[in-house]
Length: 420
Image (cartoon, rainbow, N blue to C red; front, side, top):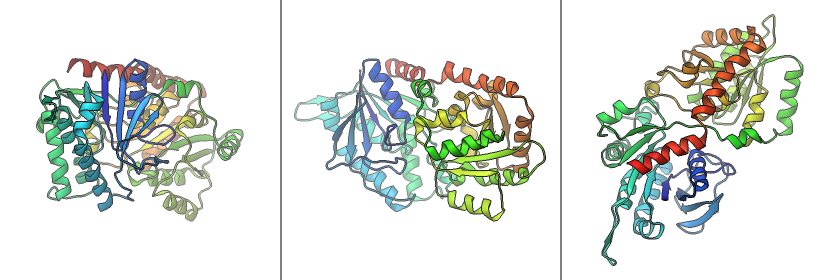
């Protein structure tokens, strides 16, 4: 099967996020399929962006053919990012006949944060080569990462009348109405999609997951991380670990406040380790320093392949969210599955339908932005025996191994391609 996978922000383990397209594509290549990844040359999510001199420049990465479009650089979420989105989609439309004729896809997957790429993907699936008097008819699957434009309105505070929001709403409705199937990482979004044009039987839930070989042969931590974490372990500290972006949406200021309430508390030493980077990191460090907190350690981000080694040093992991109605669609953070795979209990601050953490009983769910409840959860886990925590964490690991390896997810996705 020839699969064309369109994701403006697609990356790889060496480049950085987004990882999901790469991991799914790699599994399909292992199964004997051909995958062409069409992406923009710049993404704010990547640590390293490719050097691209011309549109549709080809680069082969682990058996996957990446085709780069020059979409333009930007910073933040302003006009330049919006321009990059429209530039990518315009160029994708310009190359639609070449894609249909040269790559000859059996299925086209449109898979970006924003939904307007689905319009171009549908045109690729239905384009006509007038010179050859040939019409192409290809399956189209739209993959949902985030709920745009709901995210723009409910977290970004943008008006429903904003021209950009109107365009995103049109793209979303178009995708639900015209795609042969919709694959969503969010398990509770079907009702909303049905309200916006999705026909019965077209919704499929395929969440994120883990890559087994990265857990079987993990990369080592940088020396700085090894020394700091090794000292905490040697001191007998109970370590609450966070890894990932330091952004407002991760609600880390609430974790800092919880650390403040536990700093210097009699009994077992409880330490908080925050690993990663982001726009809020300077503010978080400044707040911790201003309050004189001695139980917080900030460390730089690590390569994704070193996450298993990192989490092994934690006694539990923390995931935080803001209190937003957006989570009514569910939660599917990569760090949730990484925390579960590590076999460590998870403290999950979220207001959402039941998550895998709650369903398999591998952690504690607390209300978002609630400092006192986080403190209670930390104390509860710290008071458990190591064996009790291991038993709790093992339930999460068993769940991930059963349902969330990328091999299993790729097989589930392939069945959608073959049947729709």
